[in-house]
Length: 134
Length: 124
Image 1 (spheres, rainbow over the protein chains, first blue to last red):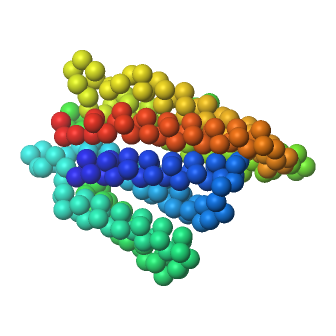
Image 2: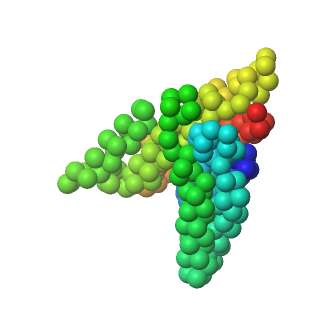
Image 3: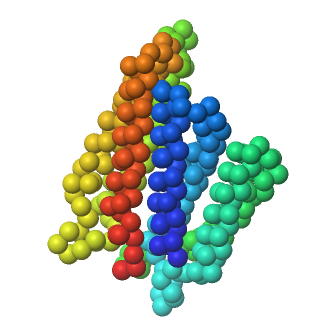
């Protein structure tokens, strides 16, 4: 599942940087007045879609296993749930803020909170010294 | 680390009463020094160092692309940090063109990082 988190994060990085470049270009050499409306998408894709998602993905990949003999990546079902909720949340928040529909934006943000909670269920017990240090 | 120091220094300068206009309008430059120059660049560096090997004879993927990514990201960012506040205070076509160049450089850096990193995101 961590592979999916990291690949999705890379995709958001690419799209977020591209939107940012369009915003910066438009600030220097204006070409479309409507480009500024994409600023919330730029921020959401890069802060949550890229940075937060990459961090969660690497943590799911690299944190120690739950206990000796357990599956290496813990309760993977919760990680998958977190992946689905996080990405649904990113798109809902983006759609809500770009289209100025508050209900979409705050419900998307709640999905992101639930996504982090699901990932925390997977990760919480894995925050401990590695087996070689015990 | 340099971008983190520069960003924090610029943030401090913005808080000084009576700071010149070119400093007070530099909010976007301050934010981008921290989130692009520090956080994103730190992620790029650590990913380049520790992600699974691309191949035995090319463990970190294409080194030329990686160097180009580093150069483009920092040239684009620093150009933006210098030019954006100046353009906000006194707009000119030359400064506007420089911002467009900064935009292209940073977008190219993002593309370079993704192209070089994508094949290294795999199960061991």
